[in-house]
Image (cartoon, rainbow, N blue to C red; front, side, top):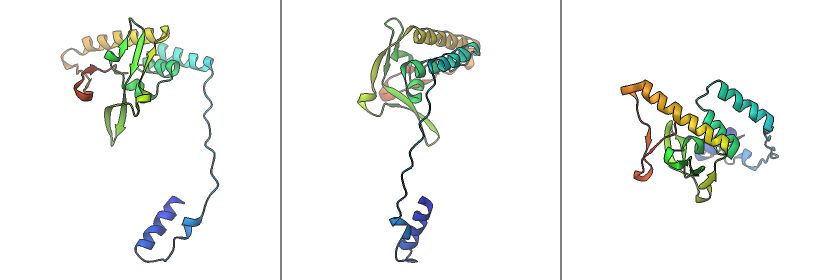
Length: 161
């Protein structure tokens, strides 16, 4: 329908037809299918499997499932936004893909910014991620490349989730 309307609008612009016959057509709205959320048992099994497989995204999965973070929020976290001692996480940035580039940007609205308490499973997952990241850095040696995001002149090492 959209393609036909665009083609007919173009034909009007080129003065090939006097009226867009498709512009008056209204279609019944189609109700979007709702995804069925996982049960707590399904989520637990998924996290156990990811942990047992050593999935490098395990910490991101935990934050998404336990805290309800969006994918971009989880991937946009930097270590300065994580306080493991106080068990608190601050959401202020997100990772977005724009024209095939990854950009570290502020969240869309101030209402999206939040400080969230970290339950034990999140603290443990983040501590494990930190240890793995340090191990990877040692193994990589001189070829290690820091991944720094610089939102408004602020440096922060990415969690590299």
